[in-house]
Image (tube, rainbow, N blue to C red):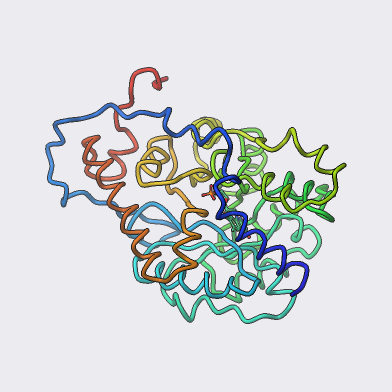
Length: 338
Ligand SMILES: Cc1cc2nc3c(=O)[nH]c(=O)nc-3n(C[C@H](O)[C@H](O)[C@H](O)COP(=O)(O)O)c2cc1C
């Protein structure tokens, strides 16, 4: 096993443990819809479908980026990709850095020839290897977009992580201007706030996945892997670093109204997906909730997607929302307005 593939195997094992979820929870429960006990529609008439990157998908959520490039990473990706194809739900790949560096085959299109597939690279790799690496990541899987992840805290805690972020924004700007597909910029669980969103907007980025605090805590995962007492002491106060997704979405939406948003970080069921849509997101993304089903089988991932779809349908029924644009304006409990 290489260093990268053993790190990724650790990540999968640790991400499955509830101790590495955000200690204070996601805060999504603070957002309450006004119950509408007169839905005035039939449940079966509710339309969950939406357009994402120019393609009609069956529901407004995607399988969030998770890792490949380790022994069982390939099987995880096969199960996720086959389910994405069967359910017409988009799928984001985990970082392709290791597999591109090691010349490993990129098999996702064998399992998901028609699904919307998002390529993935870390922002600091782009700083080092530029547009060429980005285009290779996209071309190798015929991706519909490139996801660039920002993970400065994770890099600080990770032994030998990247600490020079001087040219990251320029690299993102270059990709947004010259890549053959759209660029989506995401965090990994601490969130992208209005200040950075404005910079990304000025750099030409049209999509942000907020990936806020509330779900998988990468600080917690990397701390569990870091054996240095000194580094652990430095990192300890940052274990719960970041802002909640439920606060970031409205903040970024009002700072950058033209930016298309994906709500993620702590989204755990279809009611949370509905909350993201109500807060201005076009889509939501879930990563960790798909990990256990993906280790099991394609059928388990399909089952998970169907449960999420049904939960979203119930949320729409109970808020009197026949489609997603109605859900985006659904009534909230009064204290959340304004
Ligand atoms: C096992 C695992 C591996 C991940 N690997 C990546 C990755 O390679 N690239 C990336 O952008 N995000 C990666 N993430 C972060 C997720 O995409 C997501 O932003 C984060 O986990 C928060 O969402 P969640 O609370 O739904 O898990 C990974 C998450 C998990 C659980």
